[in-house]
Length: 403
Ligand SMILES: CC(C)(COP(=O)(O)OP(=O)(O)OC[C@H]1O[C@@H](n2cnc3c(N)ncnc32)[C@H](O)[C@@H]1OP(=O)(O)O)[C@@H](O)C(=O)NCCC(=O)NCCS
Image (cartoon, rainbow, N blue to C red):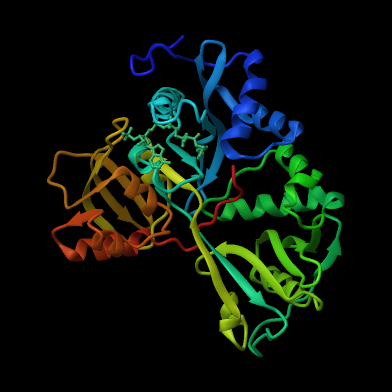
């Protein structure tokens, strides 16, 4: 048992095998969904060693939080071990009494002890995780295309090479393409076979009212989609990964060629060139814009040195972490795209909280916009401009999959 005066008389500890039935119930209640038992078992199998905690009120499990052992690609292609926080829930009978804070304090101690340089999560609500040093690092945009009127511009390539497939029958090809995609894309995550098996099982309760998955396959990419609606049919793209521009355009042409469908809806990164491929760019409407991966950088020097940069930089940054002491003052020197980051006593030129550094890390947010909001402060505006140029990402960041 881990004692925490804040929780007294509740008990915070690692779960035993006998707790998992109650954890599945708590998880279902917290998110308002029933996970298929096989899916829940698969999620449980991904939890890192000693990577879960529960809070118990007598025999009842009233809080749970866990982390998965994940591999995250960062800008430039390096792959870092990441603790992926997930399965976080507190019973409605015990909310706002500090259970999440107590579980996060314990889990982040374990994450630090295990040596993870960074932790990540996807957030159910935007107001919770900044206080724990997490900032939204990748953003995604929903595009809705009225395909009945969409025409490709005469300049748009037409590479071809797409075939129709049943996704469950080409799992190995999909996994191989995904793996190439994730190694070159900041935000890409290694995807264990168990996750592929679970996804391609394509269970009725994962379809959100749509059909079973359809697949379009190219040698360097794939699009998996469902059809929603009966009178008016909509294509909802579930997953679209392209390693080359040819694969991207060829798959898009196939999707927009689905004659009887009215709209095509897909989530993509914020700089997607899709509107420029059309003669009427207004037909690709932005119908959603959301944060995706949130990052907490636990080892600032190691993480800043792992990525590549787009411009030279020499500055001193002061990073504050109210939650777990990962902040400090660092000299950051970038030459030829590589950084040296070392603790220093020199006067800081830029100050920010740790969540802001998480937001900057993959180039998904503008330094200048964060400075206007006073989330990042520098007396010399030229430092801001250099920071902005350096932290851009050559490949737009995109999260591999939700977890
Ligand atoms: C979100 C949830 C885990 C919070 O648990 P909780 O035990 O009530 O949270 P705590 O009492 O420990 O609160 C911790 C801090 O977060 C804040 N917080 C909690 N929920 C919040 C919310 N929905 N929005 C904004 N702030 C929130 C608290 O005010 C508190 O702030 P402080 O410690 O700085 O004063 C719980 O409401 C829940 O299970 N929700 C449904 C499932 C879910 O959303 N899980 C998270 C998946 S990412």
